[in-house]
Length: 297
Image (cartoon, rainbow, N blue to C red; front, side, top):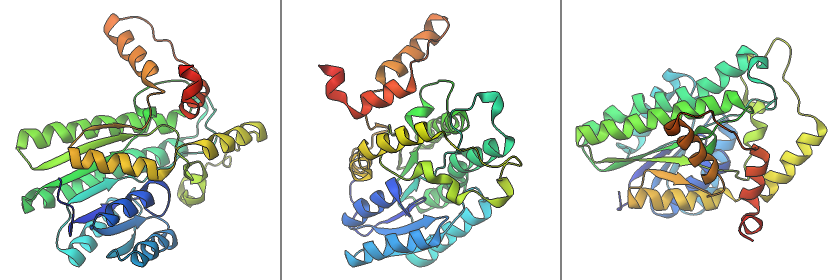
């Protein structure tokens, strides 16, 4: 999809971070933007920024975990603009207590992460793709997954498992649209570390999914490390530029860094060679993502 002027983009999780950056990038290319976020105030703030730049945009509060709300988002987009050409299933959350072992996570963490990070993508596909196919015009879909959906380790498993599922369903979407001969491209965004507020996700956790034992807090030491790492990470604007290029080029895989390539390759080779996997330290991978010059020196 190369001609973006006057076309319509729907972006979930666009109240901040990568979603807001994508809204600004595609809006700057002449697209009309539907800014969706569970935090209506944040969505409206993004719209205000877009409007100040002359971009036609609206804000729609949406909890992507609720299929009825995603249907309502589609209704709002088509009611206002009559079409949707670009769908960015971007909303995501990371439950706190990321350094628990897999058996230690409360069920509420599993449900919340799966509902947003995986089912949010499914809901977007179900609500928008039939209408986009019916229109018969060129379009594109972007799934924001993660490098966590391509590698494995002991940590952050509720998030990573959902992202693995998001990768799989996006590959299925890509294959299905090719089988259909549809003029709709697909991109799978797998960011490494990005300077966003995703590790403040607890601010948006539904009350119904609060763990009975309370939300786990990170140790002060780990919290300080996470803060330092995220302040040093690449900007959402850099990621938005990469997504923009992928849409224009109709490119499926969008990895924001090569720092995890060795871990991805090792996992794939272990599968093919039928040998037990060996998982690298995620912290070391993240640090190499932030300091690539040290890796190459």
